[in-house]
Length: 219
Image 1: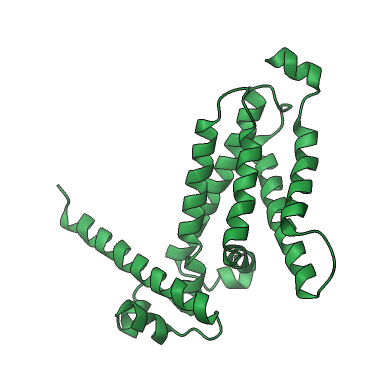
Image 2: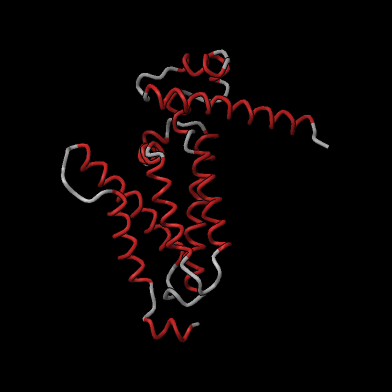
């Protein structure tokens, strides 16, 4: 049986998601600068004061919009790891492809992640948003790490440090996006994000892979 405290928590979570959904629509239509808390409150059919019961500021609300995408991404990566059979494909390659698709399907996710990398931004966020985002990032990192471990256990990859390798992959992923975005903003010719990301992954995976003869031995 659901207790009163549990019901209250569920109601709070539902109201918080309602606000985030309304905010996502307004931010997407108007952009960050032209969006106001008043507009979000109107879309959510709430008072301005009610919004501030859940989010410290417009910035806090905006940054919280990465929570659900990160949680969904982590779940998908974990599912890829579970579905890939030993010696039949690379979970890490599949995970990397999904990362790239995730970034291109909604570039705003990367914009938020880039803002979160700034210490002055993090210091202004509420504890609830900070913890939720940190949890999402941790889950994504663990899923990437599991993909590396799967490659090692099946003999596809050399025995490397999975956690550190996952960190490098995540950094390359963000870096490829930022580099492509910077080139685009100043009209410079160059590879697309998808191309840069693929080249980066191929370079890393080449270093991870065992020599063909040793892969055969491991199988």
